[in-house]
Figure 1: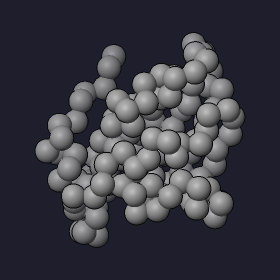
Figure 2: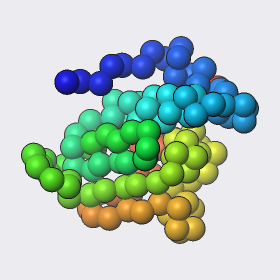
Figure 3: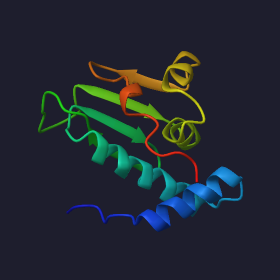
Figure 4: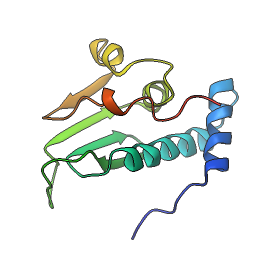
Length: 120
């Protein structure tokens, strides 16, 4: 079953509240899922799994396909870290070097597709 698409208006509003620091856990969850949805649109494929527990995960980026188990590359981080790099508040390289992102496998550097959306 495909995930329900988050509207641009709803996603942008959740991102705005998150950026203003007046967000609820529901806002954070929606903002994470919205930005993951945009990443998937910008970088279709299934060679990298981007995980942002507990709110979401997507497979993205063109490359070798897999059908079962863990993909060839996995990138995982906390929601706040994802939203910072997804909106351009921080860079993937810096957060990775600070140990805030776990990335393994070929194509696990997401820099070419970030930021996915600037903060409203």
